[in-house]
View (cartoon, rainbow, N blue to C red):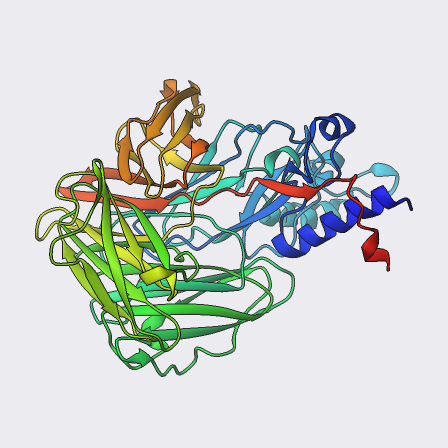
Length: 527
């Protein structure tokens, strides 16, 4: 094996070790000629997503949506498939998205000389029905959606490769007409990981909060669930060594893990073996509910983007691991710049203890994002806000965790011509972004607009809508210069006088990865 080939393989192997499910392959010669510097940026060629079980309510109406943006340099073949988590296996598919079983015959079974065996055909037909994808993309640039009603809508496990892998995004949006958690609940499907933080959960009697764990692999995962309240870690009864079976989803009611009833709780999920997807579903008797995605990793500087401008109440919940106390500096990135909320200039956090702070109608009718900073970034913190909209007796709630920056590109799904708000903030420096509205799920022509976000501001941009739109569509945000940029998308509709809404931060889709240049001399690895 020559040195150039070895150096490239070593780089790719190291990348796979870091990214887990993401993978790349060697670039084509043409791409190599265009590269300069020590590394090439290439599209990811394989990735995975996990979606929690949407609801246990028989009144729930769920829409699953899947989308991959068109990516220059991506492979021209591939698949993107989401299946119910309980399905143990699936037929292998070729590059055109057609399974081997589909090629062999409608029931997927053949006997001697290619003739179908009657009994085998019946058994295979059952297997094919069980393995049928819930959702499968047909082409990059065009979202697909499917509806599922009631409590039987499943958790999903999905993989994408080839031309569908770079930037693949999936979303589930659920409307619950009545009962605990009534309202609009939305969550972006996420990648598997080994640690998660969820500030903003609760074990109070008025709340019904579940931690959803989804295992995409063929071996069991073992998970520890730690709960932290106002006085420190809560004693849990069954939070250690929770087993999540292979290719399955496990919802656990938080109030059954501890006898302590607390309004504000931080949940930490640590995976001992394997990996899982995790999300908290927070349901309230009076103010509806929504999904609480994981906070960005503990940091001395946090951004919580896209608090709705008509928010009636904002409650911040924050937690710092370890023993060190911290006084957090609080700022609001408004349309005109960074301001300090009167009466909440700094907030004191005790080490290892969860704290909640009522910030009132923080945004006062304008777009806003919360910016939290520890002195010199010295103490890491996780945080989330709970937002209420609507008048007393007809309120709905949603959650916004501290978000990761949008480094290159991110996508929000299930948008509608009315009721969609895209909020973008650049707290540390101005930025230029490009926003593309995809074709609709049932028709429409993509549209693109460019925006300038001034330093220290938050803007609710007038996002483009596909021409002749039919169905829902995707909004893809790409950074062109400046930054860092943070973004979120709000979906809203009114039902029975109640302002149903859900907010999803837009994490970077990690669709591109840097790969060491094949010409680099890594011969030191051979010594």
